[in-house]
Image (tube, rainbow, N blue to C red; front, side, top):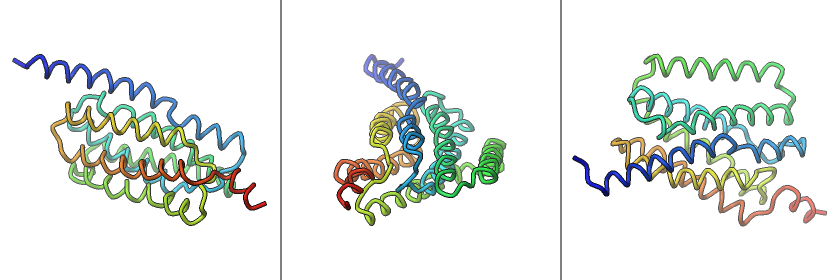
Length: 214
């Protein structure tokens, strides 16, 4: 029989998990709006988002195959869809390549998801590869911001939401998922997003940088 403290922790974890999932539905909306309204993806690199999509696909597949509660990873599904949209927008505004790159990218993502869910990809690969991909996804934008001295069209709110959500997710994973590899795979993006948030708070955006250069 579980203790009252354990029951309370689980209840809190469930409540926070569903709050994260609800918030994830519009997590990247500010970034999508910023690109569309500016009709520009200046200062943004799609490589990081592409790596994030692959990492999230592997993570979702691993959690699904292990039978872990949907509440502990469900937000990744909604975030993946939004990242796919962002990648298409960046490709469109940067080189106008949506006509052929868009459908190809969507098809490749669907094929990867099918392979992961079907068991073609081993469990060990599903849980370890996202760690390296998280580093790959976060580093290009961090380096680009550092070299340019500004954050371009990168929006602050989605990164803030990511840091907040991952902080809560670390707690819920610790409470509900007895898998240290899953916990580690979430700690890495939390660290990188925290660094990115720090850049957004310190460095100017594209508009401020343009005025400064004038």
